[in-house]
Image 1 (cartoon, helix red, strand yellow):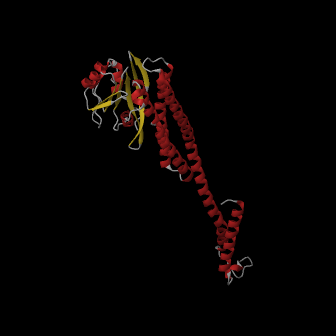
Image 2 (tube, rainbow, N blue to C red; image 1 turned 90 degrees about the horizontal axis):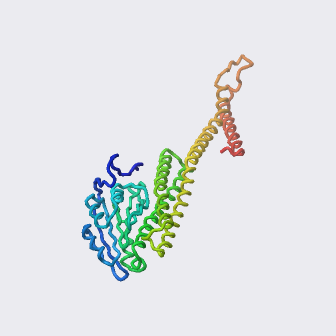
Image 3 (spheres, one colour; image 1 turned 120 degrees about the vertical axis):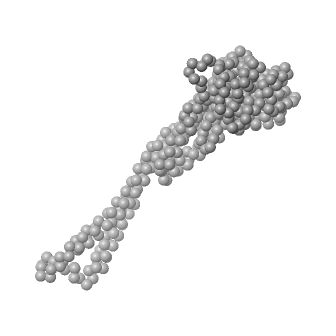
Length: 355
């Protein structure tokens, strides 16, 4: 996972410069949805010029740009809908910090969508332009996260009966709620790491802890600014946000608080994981040393015994000779004494709770 993912112009480039970037694997695709409370029409693979006709209808228009947009497409959309050049530049230069900018009769919002990519946590930029009766969304990821919203629009109900600001809330709600399954997966990883730390910690476990902390840092960089975006929509006077939509935005803001609470809990748990790893490693080393010490202690008395009788001082004329060397039952008696020593030491260790 790369630490720095933002695309940028060379220093000194004039503001609002649109520069093409390497295309993604997903081809560029524009989808247009016009809807009212009574009906809905969908058009796929349209052109920016074709989207201009939607402004003349008394409908709510949703233009979704999926894939890596080119400077030519961005200029056409900018001229058609009056999009600010600096906002267009931020769309092309992905990796922006989540933010909210107010332009003339228009809101520009940048959000980050968390996603798993090849087993690693990553973020995908979602750019949104809100007008009086239209909304333009940009997403250059591989999958399309907004298909559930299209299903809701096709089914009618409250979503079709409200304005473009409610559509904006629906998209923001989907983006923010995507954090819950991500945190659920991270919670499962925490449980697995804790079990591994207590059972058999190793170098692989230490690498997993560092990867987990990197994922949390990435989430923190994304979650804090998104909460500020929701706070701005609620606290500041926005002509494009109607009063009947603000309760839904407050609910969305509550979701960000819940996600941040979970995040803070996981961060506290991850902070102690390294201590748990060191403690588990030390505990495991102590257990190994205890077993080795017990084994060495069991053989110290027998080693002393066989060392004494291994001196072989058996002169029959000397009163200081070893009479046991010529004993008929000397060898089995030595083994009996050795076994009694080992058994006695084992019983002593067991009663003391040393193993």
